[in-house]
Image (cartoon, rainbow, N blue to C red):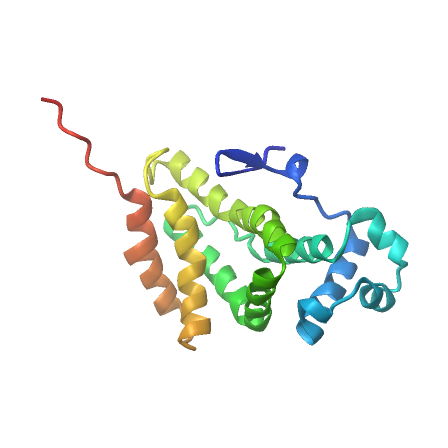
Length: 211
């Protein structure tokens, strides 16, 4: 299967974005997320993960080179699992469901998100993995929404500020929760969809006149 486009390069399972391997990995990732909440990235150790997950360190190292790779895989799996809104049949409906899913994970993981932002500043390896594995994986659902909208004729196939759209949806939601401490109710989400996201996606720069 194809991967995401980032910086002109395709990012997918063949380009360093590993796929989950089943229920056992899901349980392991849950342990990683729990420990991140409890002790933070700097104090998290492979020993602690192995002990709580009841697996050997050798098993972990067989699949991941170290802590940064394991944490990135856990974050990717968690976010992809939440960011999988249904096909509602319309761009507006799809965007509302996407924002609801985004709001759910932002509320549930606000402490984790802030801790990981700090950890990325102190761990270049973690920052690289998040930027190249976690963030592209989060765009899968939003990219699918744009593909469906273009197929319906709701937006031109290549029109709209696509990169700006991908940045705006999570940024506005996280700012509302983390910076302002305000609720992300349907009134707010509807305003974001109607007044920001749809206009951005339907924006077409004026073509230069031909003299």
